[in-house]
Length: 387
Image (cartoon, rainbow, N blue to C red; front, side, top):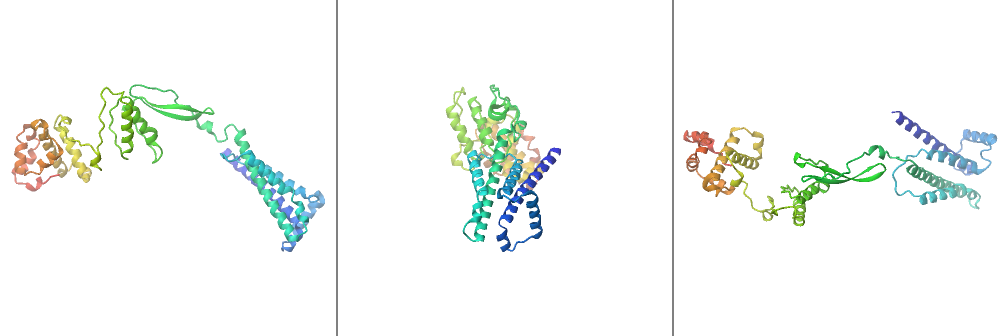
């Protein structure tokens, strides 16, 4: 708080200095263009008496340069409080040109008052050059103050206090992902690494859209894991961005694999650019709980509203029935017909044909007992649970 108060006090002092500088410029114009100002209808008696007293006691207006010098001195003092800012376009050549132009226009324009023109023209030229020179001096002073502060101060933008030492070692193992970094510390830029030595513990990358998550992190994970012989399952939300990176990198880095993997693409939006797959392949299921998980996933994706109704009878019943069908196809003829189209075709048969077949297997008889009781009891409406 004390530092903020000091800064505010310094800013007010600098503003006061600049106001005094502008006041001396206005006084110079008022005194040395007095005849024309009277013609313009500007006549302030109190100001006239004050300026006459200054001239009589201090000789302020005996020379046209005195008021100009006071104006430049207060202008220079006001520029000392200018804050340093990052501005690459400020150069000493521009500062010198601005100060030289301002000095010529501001100090060497007295002869304009003696031109063989009308008093109005002489005053207009004098005021114009005086104002332009003052603006050039102000710009040059502000630029010079900023440049000097940037060059003379060790840390004008507090970069040193905001920086810290980061990891510079490359820590590798057979699982590690090493992300190259660059950080500023100890008055220099340093190269470092963000070492993810155990990615199996789960990693999360968060950032706003367009912040570079894919370029800096995701792409590095894909490339380095391929180089180390990983098998990857990539969810390419912006297909084919990540798929192309993974495919091309796999072609160029096959030495990390004892057996070169096959590259497959599953594209639900464009089946023409997709490989075929069987989501209920018999090799994926070892017991009936695996069949239930497959049925659960399929049914909830077909009807998204069921996600909010999990546990409800009319949600669980079709899932259980579909799981029984999947497991039947898994154990029948060694899973030869265990595919999604076969399961849908089987479910569309009559209950009189489905239930006797399913209940003929002991592992499915108890599983389907509620359905058998409803069917034998004549509750056909409760069995209309086809997906």
